[in-house]
Image (cartoon, rainbow, N blue to C red; front, side, top):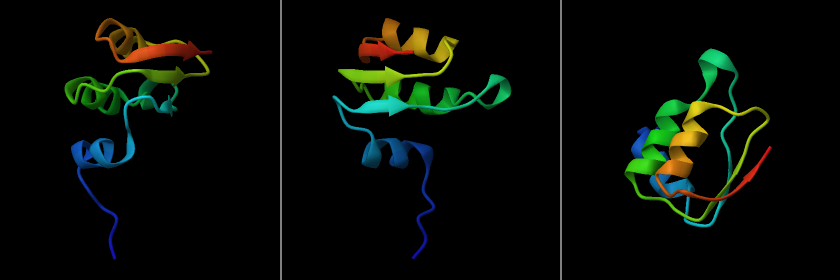
Length: 71
């Protein structure tokens, strides 16, 4: 059985309010679309973990998605 799905469906099924999220990527591989989808779906109270700071986490904080940041 295929696990292929849209990004919207993947975020909906796998990211819940209050989860710890580590969205990995470096320079051109930063998962902006996944972060924007979490914002669009109104996820909140997330703990965001990241090895380096980037703009998507700034946007998620500004959108009210983050409860805590871990670097």
